[in-house]
Amino acid sequence: MTITITEHTIRLATTPSSPDDGEGDADVVVQTKPKTKRPPLYKVLLLNDDYTPMEFVVHVLERFFSMSHAQAFEIMLTVHKKGVAVVGVFSHEIAETKVGQVMDFARRHQHPLQCTMEKE
Ligand code: TYC
Image (cartoon, rainbow, N blue to C red; front, side, top):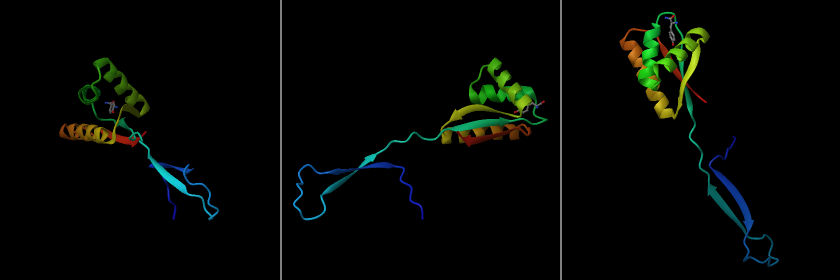
């Protein structure tokens, strides 16, 4: 079994008030220091397909990712040419919400547009 310690750093220190009495082991204090870890971030990706209209993708990027029209058009073209692009980086919860909103919006308009997320 592998035990991985990720939440705490452990510091070993001899206590100042414990003179060695010759009785064997010296006293040792184990201090655990809570270590704050930044939450992981997730990239939201938009995938190309042959059927979703370009204007629809531009609208999605404006509506759900707060892009200007020019920015949205540029990213849409990147996806169209390269197959995929990162359209934003968010916490897990926000990324999941964005993916859900895009997938639901595309489904309701009967377009095959795909949106996914992956850990950064
Ligand atoms: N390739 C699509 C077309 O030619 C446009 C498109 C762009 C589709 C980006 C999806 O994420 C996408 N109509």
